[in-house]
Image (cartoon, rainbow, N blue to C red; front, side):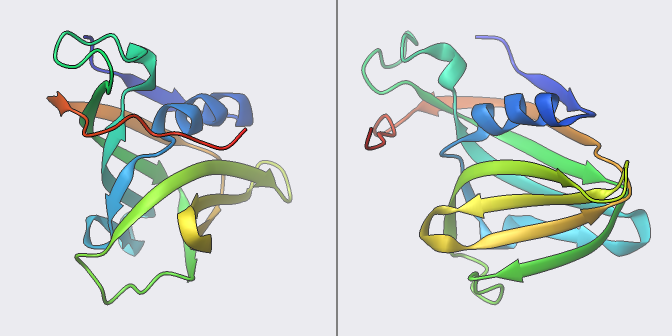
Length: 146
C-alpha cells in the first residue's frame, strides 16, 4: 500500500483530503497552532479508505495509517465544542470544508463527531496531508447511516 501525499490549493483539492481523512481519530493534544509560523497542524490515525478494505492484514476491517495534516497561512483559530484541556481526549474527524470570504481568503472548518469544530481563518487555502509510514489493522470499518 502506497503512502499518500496530497496538496490542496482549492476547494476541490480539499474535498479529496476531506474524503481521505473521514473517520480519522485525532487526539486533542495532537492539534496545535503555531501563530508565528501561521500554521495549524494535527496528527491523526486515518482509516485508509483508498485501500477499500482489501489489505492483506485485514480484508474485512481495513487498515489505519498515521498521518499528518497541516494548513499554512492561518491567521486565526477558533474552537467550539472541544475541551482543549483534555489533551488525551479522542475526536473523530468527519469533514473539512473551505468557505471563501474575500478571495482568496476564507475559513476552513474541521467538523468532528459530537458537534465539535475547529475553524481556521486563512489568507489563502493551502493544506498538505502526508502519511507517516506506519499502518496497522483497523479494529473495525467505520460505518455511516445512509
